[in-house]
Image (tube, rainbow, N blue to C red):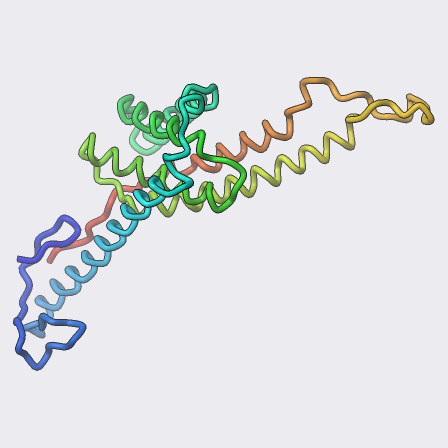
Length: 243
């Protein structure tokens, strides 16, 4: 028996020495029958899937252990308002995603997702590269946690890739929306003191205090929404067929 990607395969193989042995394939396929070839093809596909999963787990752990990872956590960061908001957002999107996909909400899964979001929140910043890697770490870590705690079958590789892509897109579009909002507000509402040489009626009204952080709020909201889109996607591992 040979094992790959959680499956067992009975392969028609012939150990070396054999004319089919090569340096890259030390075990020779021992049959050319269509049925046997289907088993061999399924085994090779399973090995490929398992390799991707293993690499994603390695990338998740490596990012967490890297200088941009968990070593930057502080007590003040964990007990901040940002952490509390991240817990609520993470748990809320997990609940919404579960209900969208299955019609049910698992509060324990939502709480676990909220916890990982709470831990990771202080690590995110303005860097596109860092945020992308941290997004992969967060979603990859979520998948690993769900698989370990709840016996789920989520793909770490798919979650890691979605985390990188969603965090990158969220960072880019969040920054652009913040810049756009800042420009729009500056054109409509005065951001500096009145100019005494220009009639007041020709100047924009002063900016109310409530508009001071509007660009940042808009950017953060859009970034958060985009980064959490993967919550609505099914990332269950597909093992394919085992002939």
